Amino acid sequence: MASNMPVVQGYAMTNSNAAPMAAEGTNYGMGSDGDTFNGQKGEHQPKKFNDVFFAVLFYLHLGAMAILLPISMNANGGGGDGAGSLGQIIYFVTVCGIFAVGVTTISLGFMMQYAKQLVKLALFFQIGVSLAMAIFGLMAGSMMMAGLCFVSFAFSICYTMAVWGRIPFAAANLNTALTAVRANLGLSVVAYTFLIIAAIFSMAWTTISNNILATYPGMAFLLFLSYFWTHQVLKNTIHVTTAGVIGTWWFAPHEASSCCSRAIGDSFGRATTYSFGSICFGSLIVAVVQALRHLNHHLRGNEDAQIVVCIIDCFLACIEGIIEYFNKWAYVYVGLYGYSYLDAGRNVMTLFQNKGWTVIIADDLAENVLFMMSTLVGLLTGAVGFIVASLDGNIFADLGFDSPGGIGFVFGLLVGFVLSSILMSVVASAVNTVIVCYAESPREFEVNHSQLSAEMREAWSLAYPSYGNGY
Image (tube, rainbow, N blue to C red; front, side, top):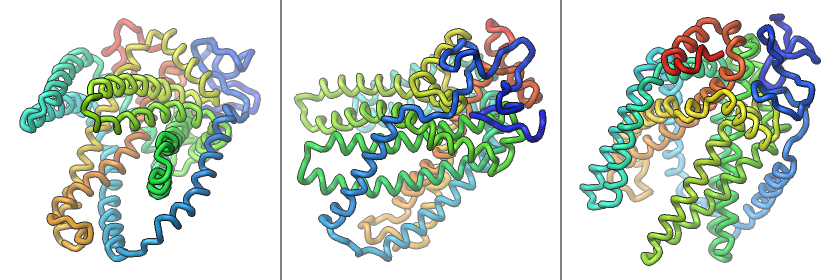
């Protein structure tokens, strides 16, 4: 493959009009009609702005929030007290944050080395958490909580038995995704930048909502929608960017094998321009359901409506889960090929149905590992927070807490878990992208990453012998 080969929408092309490299006898890339899908492989879409209406709507919503912010700040008063306490808290968060980011980055190599063992451990971790929550429910006298957790405990055991044979492929998939992410660690910069943006927006949103809801409580749904929509957009922008980078690594590794590789800038540029409307579209659907669920939670104060509220919440939770499941695969195709939101979702699901992979993509074994590692990093960071707060008992003094060590542990755990989850979400996006690319183009993977390909083929044959060799 020539060294000057350009990368287009997540894969390599030998010239501006040629198709990406494929094995003999395949027709990968540009088809006779860019609006059709052959059910086997995606096609690079012409550069155009997709789902523009939703991008415009999102920007208008941000404009409205920007107008409301200074008005709300004036209404709430300046409030410049507590500057010293704020400085100490910033110091605390900085120390915990540096530790969490460092440990999480180091853990990527650890997970690569012990992927199979960690997948198994994560299954037992899930069982143990369910059992612990059930026992806690009994001790707290909450029979409903205990009952639900015991059901979850039993379900976790059954799930572990059902998926045990699929562990080798999940481990190989995780190892491949981790390798790709470590080769493009600049993705973590994008992720943490978006985390800062999310934190700033959350503070602004809190200021606005406190002022608006005091006068117009009927605006609650729109405010909740604004909050969840913005955070969904930020999260899915990272997802689409990651998909584009991992796709480039899959087909043209020389373009995506450094911390600040060209693929990261190209993929981020597409995600925030041509594909941004598609990101806003899918994010809005999820945000509507999340806002409805949040409103529904406020009705729980009415004891007469507890059963109805619970039923509504379960119904909305199911809808939210279905949409987010659809989104995580749709956005892989958005990042890889530049499809619009609906086309991306329809095409990637068609691919899995034609491959017979609907059972395979239902496994969350790799994501269980990522959650477990985020929890572990959170606990370790909590220990650091406990030490820092104990050494300087004045950090949380102005907040009225009597036990600085205890609150330091809790705050440290939250900081560590959130920061670790951000980087782990990049890995999760990489895992999903690897599955899609392996479904479409295992031969290209063998050419560009022979060792990883051999591991995945061997693991595939062990986990899914009835599916052949994955080709």
